[in-house]
Image (tube, rainbow, N blue to C red; front, side):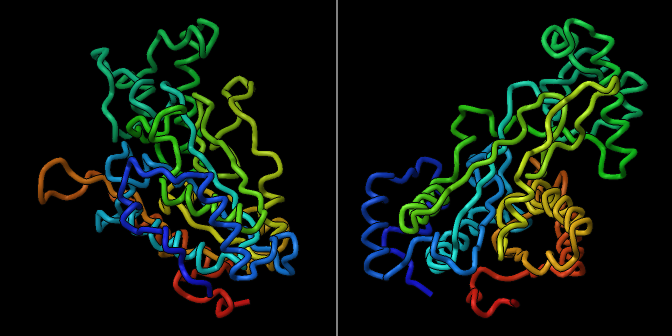
Length: 346
């Protein structure tokens, strides 16, 4: 494995303001590639794709609106320290990166700004909205949103909100959960954590490699946890809520090795892996053996209580552990970032 470049400081994984200088990184990466005789990624005999899921400031830093601290409270910070070290040490064996960006607008069906309670007051974040709540009028979508979401038809919007919650529960996935506003397009929290941006740029410059991006989550009326597509594509009347991701699945499964890291293991990583498992079942179970999950580079959402010493408001750790178990059983490899890649199961 390669050494870690001297410019990398693990402490920067905790800094909201840290931002790398792309010009300096380009110069350093070219020199690094020459010194260590790192060839362009196009020459790789084994094509390794590193999928980085939603490594954005709002998720990865304690100042973020939806920080993924895990049970330790240090989750995403320490995950990114390990992940960046992994990228630098295995630079010559990672062919390309593909990064997703959770991307939202001010009003989304999973934000408090979308809903009102019986008294006409906003519904707080971390509220679970069941189909029964909507059917009985405990919660309802804000009427004024219908002007641009439903052509002014408030009844259509109410029916759609109920139908959406109904379909989520009918699929047995979960009830609608209201998150604090996060990853708003154009906000500081939407951008990559600085150390992650540094590592992906350095890799791209050193290896002449693509550093692809996938934006997800811009449809106001559906959630979009998975890299591979929104939760629900069609409205109750058959009209389109969002479009499925085109070509991303083929790109992931075309790799000789697909390595997955990111946030959160209980939500966007989990949904991505579930969709990937379903696709592999259709295309051929042997494809699962190409997938490697960096268990120490992802954490679960744990919402701390505002009262010191009290139980968390929500803890999704079991959901994260459950999907990793299912991935193991299907033949995917759950590995540690500190293990040499040439020692991974082949």
